[in-house]
Each structure stands twice: as structure tokens, then as C-alpha cells.
Image (cartoon, rainbow, N blue to C red; front, side, top):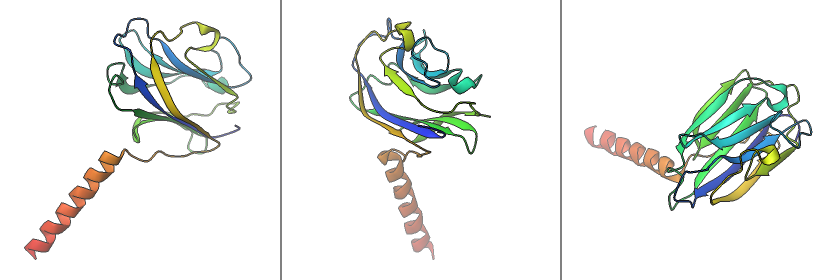
Length: 173
């Protein structure tokens, strides 16, 4: 893919411990096949926090995004949807969790924005392999910006609030 792109997928943690957890996947550009240069890595920190690290994707420097999730947040019976959106027109790299914006890198302007590959279960060169079991489902790559739709529960609560407001307005007048 050349230019703006979106990657979307669902995650579920099936492991009972965070010991040894590291990289979930890497996205790369410029034909990188090993190491971590020219890539983005979705990775658990030593504290179990889930970050999207920019490792110089397309020559772009700086910026990491904390998803706000931990390994325990993903250890549920339900799926968690993540979307990574590289929008060159607004010069932003964003991460969405269940349709809600988790974080953005501004000034996003990689010199080589083509997404040329991905690797699941480790960073390139297997320097920090994932040690545990995680289900990944509904992996989708889009050539362009595709903004995620908020989780159904969030949309339902919004509609319920709007209906209550309209009923209240109807009663008072």
C-alpha cells in the first residue's frame, strides 16, 4: 500500500500471566525484513502496558502511542478491536480502541509511507518474541483512511440518552 493506510484487527489474551510478553506485531516499510528500523511495533512494556512504538517507519522519527490497554484488559472473554490509521493528508498516526481514539502522533509525515509488510508474534528479527497465547481475528488492511465505528454499546448508550432527552422535552412542554 502506498500513502495513507488503515489496519484493523481484534485481539483476545488467552494467557494467565504477563511474564515474557513482548511484541504482538510489526508493520514495516522500505522493504525492511529484519531488525526494527522502518517499522511500527505493537508491544507490551515491562509493566504490561500496550504501546504502538514508531521505530522510524518510513524515516519518520519520534512518537509513541499508549493504547491505554494492559495485558489484563485483553484477558477477557470478549474481543478488543484496534485500528491503526496513518493519515498523510492530516499528518497524523492514530490508534483507536473499540472505535474510540486512544492516541495520536501529530506531524506524521514519513518520507516513504508505503506499507510493505507485517509480521505477527514478534518484532522483525524475532528480537522480542511474544511468549503466550493471543487470538487475533478479523485482520484487515485498507489502502486509505478508514475511521472505525464506535463499539455498539457506546452507540446504544448515546441513542438511549438522546431518546430520554426527547421524552423529557416532550413532557415539559
